[in-house]
Image 1 (cartoon, rainbow, N blue to C red):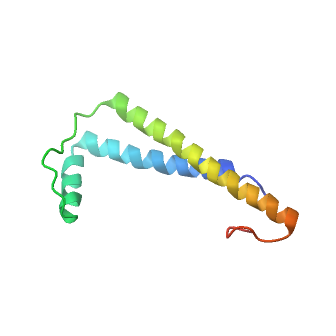
Image 2: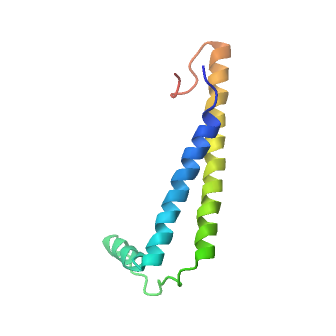
Length: 102
């Protein structure tokens, strides 16, 4: 049985979070973030008259993508480590301890 879930889960989780924040940064750059957020809030019957977005800054956008990617990697790695731990425990005791068993 393979036990390398930690790195795989970390890369996938970090990549997804980084991609989402890259998309958000692009929305800010293109000037469509404000209307989209206002539309979504209106659908939820929420009114925030003080809501506004600052001008796009590339340095902050890069930091946002990198930091969320790293945090996502750590979270995914932790989850993958727990999956691997349960796999080892399962093999040692011969019983199924989690729903992701192979």
